[in-house]
Image 1 (tube, rainbow, N blue to C red):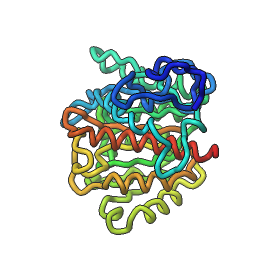
Image 2 (image 1 turned 180 degrees about the horizontal axis):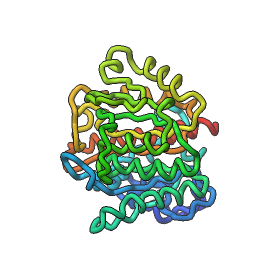
Image 3 (image 1 turned 135 degrees about the horizontal axis):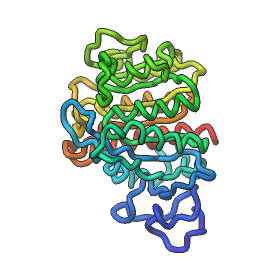
Image 4 (image 1 turned 90 degrees about the vertical axis):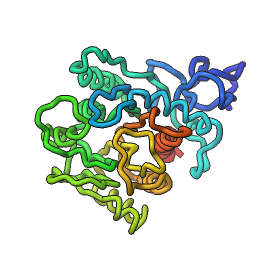
Length: 317
């Protein structure tokens, strides 16, 4: 461990280095994600964690605006030990910071998309990869706007119970139509994009490949990994994980739960097999703490985000 911090505790505010860890009680201290330093200075950073606390585009149960805080709180044990099953400490290999939350004026929801886009663009402009916590799934759209402006159209790897490709009627805030809009506006390349865990019906896939939940259960994570890698190829890719991809038994704390979903173990196994992809960012969305039990949804979200960091850290071994 680095020795430049003489007194342990409250690493989120007191850490002087972006890499490494210091002792911290899991039950106390400032709750940044993985106890990373809170900072808007991205000098030397590789990944910036940020919250997008917005849920006014939901079509059923609210509460996802509380998701970023819950995911941070659920990350305390992940910050304590080297990563399993990776066998290394990703925070020694990568400089990860907590960029705090995007400020949103909820009295003016029409201003939210531009605010989220600008917030994400700040991170991308520094050459840093964003790891964003929703919020409802709509927030992925303005993030993708910023991503596409920097990288061009990207492959979308999308874990969800819902395809979110229903007809876009021009309604600006809807968490079920934003990927239709992303295809129509050239933010993602549908020919390189894939959706995993889907178990609702859409009349138009918008050209995205679907790996539905029954396929995952019947064929297992390895078959899914093969399909994702084949679809994405060498394209730059963005990962979006709607926590309702998991079955409600594993993620009750979400706004639109659908039975028959993936287990946490299945989702982690798939994610851990996607290290060859050229990732430009990730989000985890739709964690709604008021409907959670014993933090199991938030813990799943925190672990998925942590393991994406490990995917990136494995490239720096």
